[in-house]
Length: 372
Image 1 (spheres, rainbow, N blue to C red):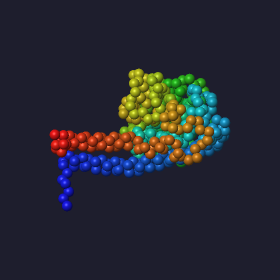
Image 2 (cartoon, rainbow, N blue to C red):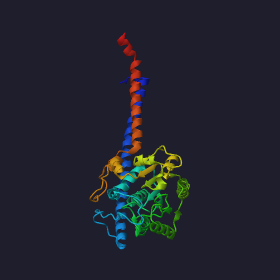
Image 3 (cartoon, rainbow, N blue to C red):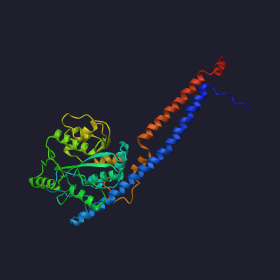
Image 4 (cartoon, one colour):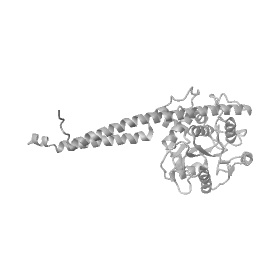
């Protein structure tokens, strides 16, 4: 039995259809495997942050600072005081409690993945003492992904942050190192506050932090000129990143050096930022400068906005029993930007198929015979 010979246009249509189906099915299997790996890393970061909080509770208790049942009902060990000699500005206790949710470590794994960061890459972290929980989250995410985390931290803090003189952000990092949960040794430290040199603090608090930094042996950033301070920080990041380029910058809190003096930064949507935004020359912080250099940024300042954008609970009154149930894991299963690219390619092939079919019909001899 002889089969009718396919015409050239018809053969092209079926070839494109077969290729597109193979492409689509192959992508679906690859996307499932990739999303499973991503979720595994997110859960690993979640558990690392849980372990870190447990270590910090233990360190705090040894210093005579048990978790405050009223202001820290989830016993995270990451809530500070309303006021102290090293307190810089007002702060929201609700925001600080929210940031202590270990799901933020999982969220950072997701955002780093969306930024294109891969295992072994170097990422820069610019933190203030105002959100110690987010610093822990960033370190847990870096640990889960085996990243080279380059940390520069200012020690002064807003209300309810790491503003206890006996348990500063530096003390917390030392605790995490000693416990073996996370490995963090900051590249540099600064006093923080106005001009990054403690303007606005009392002389007692400023002198306390300056002495602490000097005694630590860490590199001391003590530069009140914004452009020079930013250059110094970026130079340290690039030097310690080695030959490989920085793959992302994580901004934690509202440090003067990191967000600069341009009020436009306050309108910046929290979360992953990949494109530069207009800024007043000479007023850019590290965040804007990184974006101008093509380095994606993860902006962690507006905590309520982060919760609304990524579906995390605001001021949870109980600690999560386990990770893997919030909206961020559904986002991970979606496949991210590669899924969108592949889906767009598949749709383009489908359009090509339709176009070829129309062309075939337009030039079909049988059609012309029927119409004559």
